[in-house]
Amino acid sequence: AEARKRLSSYPHEFSGGMRQRVMIAMAIANTPDILIADEPTTALDVTIQAQILELLDEIKQKTNSSIILITHDLGVVAKYVDRVMVMYAGKPVEFSTVDNIFYRPMHPYTLGLMASIARLDEEKKEQLKPISGSPPSLIDLPEGCTFKNRCDFCEDNCANGVPPLKEIEDGHFVACYRVEDILKNRIERKNKD
Image 1: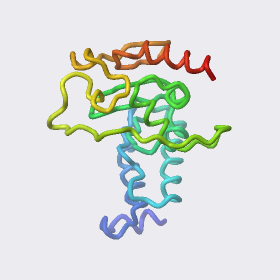
Image 2 (image 1 turned 30 degrees about the horizontal axis):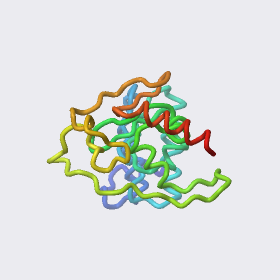
Image 3 (image 1 turned 180 degrees about the vertical axis):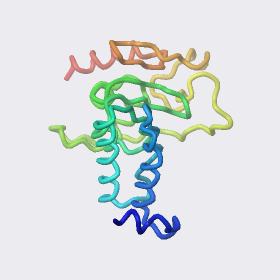
Image 4 (image 1 turned 90 degrees about the horizontal axis):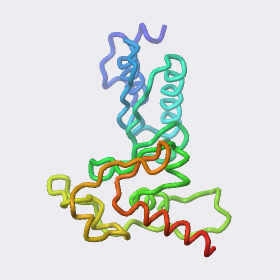
């Protein structure tokens, strides 16, 4: 009954949450195999955000479709996705399961992201660490690895072209020339603890 009343309404007569629901309805009307949701909860209050994300999750379960969720909200990523592609300056830098990204990150940017968020599951309270520097201009990207100017592991060879995504472990892909050294350093650091 409510939908019939809204058929002749103008977009400005809808709330932000209603507009998002209408967009989702339009997107799924033809039951697509893949739905791309680009920041579907931006500018919505927390309650409406949760409703929209639950709706997307329900659609995924009922239709067996895939959803590509583009978001900066790591809480949303942790709760609603299976696999994650981390992007930096428009380039993929790491791809794996959500658990690997959150608990076994390998790319320096992903390591920096994870070190900059508060975790409730840690016994000792460590200070959050910001990523040094600023992101590059997308119209004037640096030669080589786009993260090299902010990277703690940067070496000369990082300027020798964009590193390709390489499978480091089963289903865990990383675009970094130094990933083996980073993993070795992590193991050495663990042994010291």
